[in-house]
Length: 130
Image 1 (cartoon, rainbow, N blue to C red):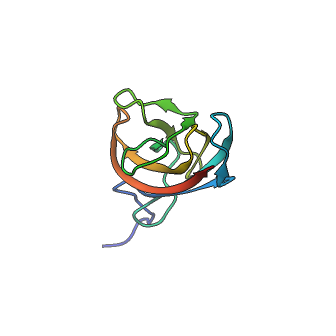
Image 2 (image 1 turned 90 degrees about the vertical axis):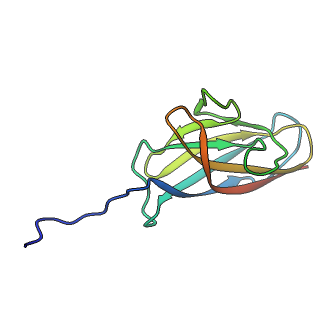
């Protein structure tokens, strides 16, 4: 038997989603915004292929959150709390708009099915509303 090729294969799709916010603290005025960048990796720590669908939410889905709105993407057809994005270069860019209640916002990143239903939490990060 001889090897005719080699490469990397992702069998399970997205395994983790690590995000960041700029800035990390906002005024809870309903209009302040933060830029979100989320990097999505497979189980072998490789960036996922372009077009991988990831759900993003600031609502209390997997964790209690102070809320707010994720701008961009497409609203899930089965859960309006979830905005669905597709990766480019293993990343997603989105905008968060602050709610009006002070507290900790938990930005949750989820694997989603074809309808946008959140299947499992891939990671989360935080924004403080003051």
